[in-house]
Length: 406
Ligand code: PMP
Image (cartoon, rainbow, N blue to C red; front, side, top):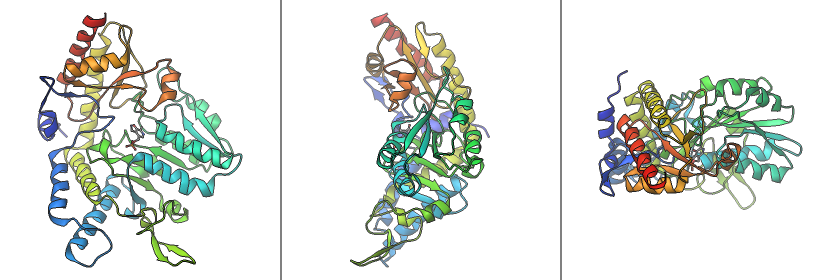
């Protein structure tokens, strides 16, 4: 499928503005993506025409809101190639999805002496929920180490899969390094030993086709806002047998079948995990975002971004004193680097004056920074609306930094 980069760019109104007197160059999509007009329109249409609380009333608007919400669930399920919309739980984002699994699944499946295995490149949101669980249960967090390039050392990972391992929790695409993990292979190694696998897909969804059946995993968590949808909505996909067996994690309206002071009973899945009024407008926006991605074509997006990533790697490779952090075999969306002539925070500030938005810091992955011996990196991250010109601008901005510091 052909990719019309100019047309895609026109779909994102926010990109067409000046910042500090220069055309905006947005290179921070790993933090959050911008939204296409189709998403903005879907959300405002929902609030203009259909808004009401869901599942609770018999009148027309409530019926429409409920239909919109449940249709959005079906869209998410079909996008992930899930077999059943009941396997989609709407949440605030990847963080909430992982906490849900750590608490609802973890509480009944992890005990003293058990182990949870993560990788050395996890975002804090796929570390801390497991630490809290381990602390509570007397379990241990194990970490599969990384090589110098930014890949998980698979032999070490395999060695760490023990009879005590209760779950593997791994990131699909690293936000700090850009590494695309071989999830199918790593998942199969765990599954062969009867160990369930949770994947943090926050950085994968905007860049590639995600097929939970092919990945062969048990849980898949993601945030809508990184995939062109509004903030405050995301989803957890989980195999229905897990969701059926898991106790609820938050109590309140909507998640119950019946309530009395003596005893309450739970709603069916997935509503058992959706206590309280959900983010219906967000779910509508999420469905619109995934439909937009499908219209553009996921293969075309992946091909375009891989071209951009190669171009960016080449352009940055020519900057004297620049060292790339993360040179994994397979990467998506992220160019993370340090300069020997300026601190990342200064780089970020100077680039901003040039209209270029990049992220600087530890990217909520402090153990990754420690592994590579840097306090912080500059991270330029890409999405389908970026262009080669954006990367040329980045190189021009770095030349300005060099003039000031070099
Ligand atoms: N995992 C990864 C790999 C991420 O990049 C992020 C966001 N930076 C998260 C999880 C957490 O996502 P959110 O803050 O949207 O819940």
